[in-house]
Amino acid sequence: MTRTARHIARIAAAGIAAVLLTGCSSITDLTSSSKPLLKSSPSASPAASASASAAPAPTPTRASGPLDTGTVTHRVDQGNFSVQLTYWTSDNAKQYTAASSKTINVAAHIEDADSTHHVTVTTFQVIQDDSAKRAVVTTDSGKFDVTPPYPYNTVVTLPAATAGATKLTLTIRLDLLVETAPKSNSYYRSTALDTLTLPLLTNGTAR
Image (tube, rainbow, N blue to C red; front, side, top):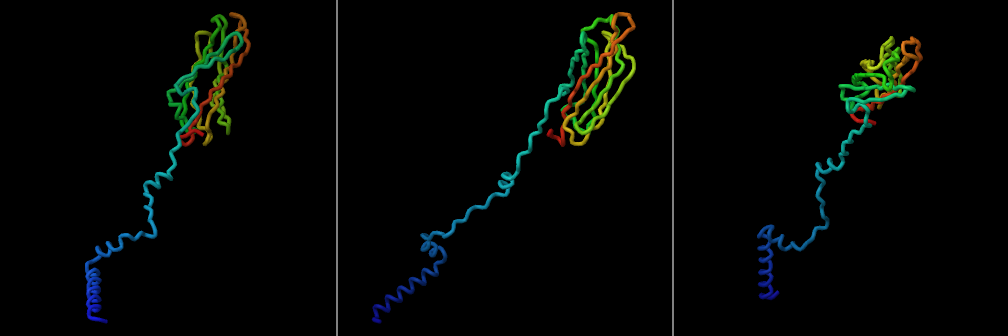
């Protein structure tokens, strides 16, 4: 090797050593054009994952009931007269469940009849049906004058229904004795039947 060639080799070796001693920044500059082989993707946020997997809470639904407003009136035709039945409660009927306490007031009076024909209630009965069992709630027997304008009033407390029941159907029966002619002391029997349906909540939501 000539003297000139040896001189050039020494200069090149010194340059490489200088580059190695300058630190990582110079090496980074030299390799900045390199591209990574794999591109990492950001991991999903735990909060976002939980939010995506959480199902929205179901909205409670329930069929409307006749006592949702607190009171309802039914009219039962009995030939040449009718029986008007008014039901009301101080409970919140929208919150009725199978196990909850339920107290209902009932008032019955005669419509479309004069006061000269004597009318008597001999039996007032309420039967509760929750689709799983049927039970007599109350039976009131006697001679109760309902000749207009006198009403028949009573309070009915319903027993707990079968667990899981979604509604109660109440059958209301009134046996009446109606005078055939004023002061005749002769009567015929007439039975008035009515129904009242109470929707129930099941575990907070109606099914």
